[in-house]
Image 1: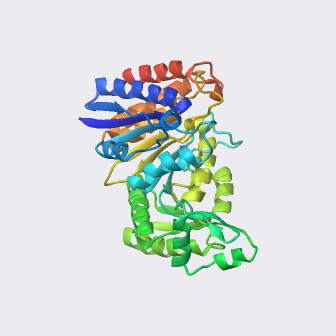
Image 2: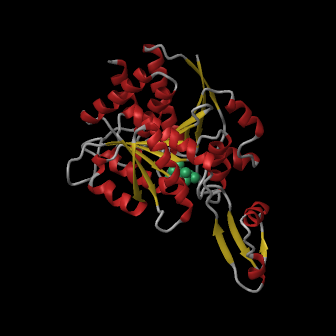
Image 3: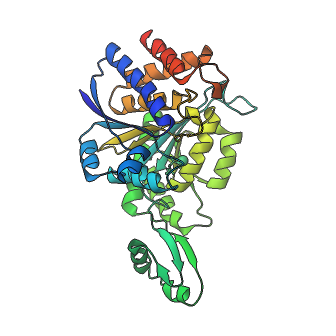
Length: 368
Ligand code: IPM
Ligand code: MG
């Protein structure tokens, strides 16, 4: 029996998580997957009502689950960054979900490229370090607001305060990679490549400009030898281009946090749009969290327009992760069937509402 935490969150998060729960219910009827689900009231509504983002109690309760199924957060009434940092990034950090796995699959005919390429890329975005450490801020008139920034600068023997006092303002963001952090990332990347039978791991960086990425190259080179799998290096700008002109040449792609954020939105579009992109925030030894890549889309919330596929493919990833890969495959096949039969939402050119599209996928699951 698996214990699931369910966090619909904001906007279309609620609609697509409802859709995903329908699928979870369906697969539990026809497979050995057995579960219970606890709903968590986390998101903008609660924040606006109580001022709470994530409490210690929430984290304790979530920590007892086998997996977290997450919708989306974001609300125009809340200043950008509050919910993202206070909820989503906090959970990723708290549960040390150091891999963000984002498959990019050629879901024809929705791939918006002129040439026909078949691809199946597994993006592994490092999910805890780099420029997502939260070590940034401003120095104005010699005053900085956050203690942790001062400490980071101190640790790095940088003292901008004196210069800021003499009339210059600074804004900064510090990115850090630790040996431990890169090693576990590399291990996961090479293990993933082995599992997928990829002979190469592509490592993305900007090592020609940012010295932060040298340690990554060093560690991935060593690990490549250890695992007997090649590593190839790609600069992020070249990678963005290559994803458009030769996506079929990539298998397992490892990418640091910030560049991974950007490239996986591009990846989602390559599959047919944000409505197709699923992701798993994975801690191989802890509690992992599965979510669609898209956000809360307040402009279409509550209208039944959201494409439920990304959230349903997140369920597929959750099933794979929980050791029910047969169920994961059934879900993937059901999505394929519905795409083949024109059963989808308007973003893909279809006529169905969120609920109708989910019901079709559920039917296709049950028919297997
Ligand atoms: C994502 C999102 C988040 C990120 C935001 C909402 C903080 O863009 O999951 O890709 O930057 O990681
Ligand atoms: Mg993003």
